[in-house]
Length: 254
Image (cartoon, rainbow, N blue to C red):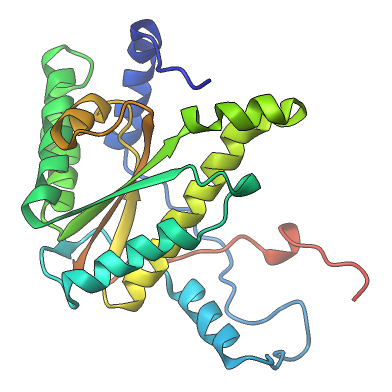
């Protein structure tokens, strides 16, 4: 059964989380993959939708500079998120992903909670005030300025019957559930970008978990995994770099 981290564990986690969110992300510029390397010619797909799907995959990027506007109706956003909940696969069809869609003023509450949580770390001396004011707080305010946030949870407790029934796989079900949740995050991200949004994926657990649960009456068994921030892009994404495909992919029998 999934267990909440103890206060002692949280004490050790907080500096690490703060360091991650205060430190500028390292950008390593590697050889870009601009062509189809593994074969001499581009393949011809049987279904043109395959090409469209792969173009959406290749076009997905991380956008941080977002504004609180939407290029589509809220019903379109709602449909995208609902379909991800219903149709993304899960191991043994356990359906462990739980999702909350927050728009406009409700969305802003998430980032007010995050700001308050990190201000608490500053006040307690765990985070340098100057770094918070010059780096992290502006970043959090940029998330707040967006249009919406999708909260992704995993219900680990719902796996108890499956762990008992398939004891040989008991220690695998939690990772399986997280993999399914990651697929939901990716699908929603791609679909939102296809509709004209920019988005970025954040991880502020466990700092915000308690207040998130209280604010939206989230069941205790739902464990927050990620926050997908989205809005209309103010500017383009940063440069995208690729490690050599030859070091990451192998094919046999072709």
